[in-house]
Image (cartoon, rainbow, N blue to C red; front, side, top):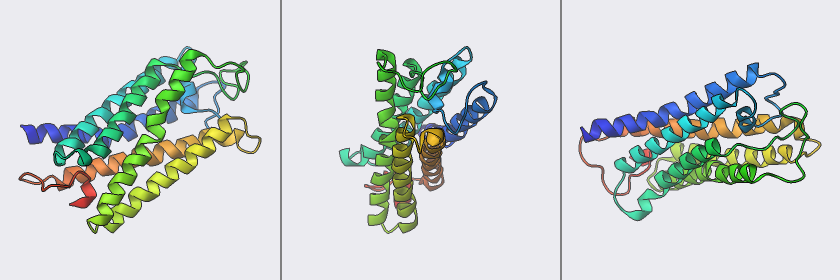
Length: 230
């Protein structure tokens, strides 16, 4: 039963990315006045249909927390081995926080709002703070797993993890510049943010899937908290 429970938690990690991405892509495609290349995913939580994206944040955050628990159950009990699951769990908490605190309007969405507010609201500020563990925690988790995988001789997974971390950080920086109304990037902020999200969430799905495939029939040896280190 404990092993079946762990498998169920890991399947949540596999599902988190596809569910979250599918919902925001479909909703962004049909929302009036919304431009996916320009506007952030969080802006879908604004307006009369905002409950859809709010629920999407909450569901994804719950799936992340489950994945973190599943990955923690596959590793050893040393404190250092908990770094990656803890960072993934923090990202899950950040997604739930993003559901609780709605973002401020940005880049002219909803229609009729300014490109940038002169005074951010307290709720919008809390939303931005909740995003930090998502856009920084996931790359950090990928780097942790990449380093441990490299030391274990699993070079392919290590390079994939490192590449995912760098890509996510770079596209997050570009998206932030776009939402900050950089003239060259303002119309591409949404594109870069989507690239960051898809990269990070795909890494989690891959990590969870590998953990499922590598689950041993007996207790894992110490130090195998990342699936690429088996």
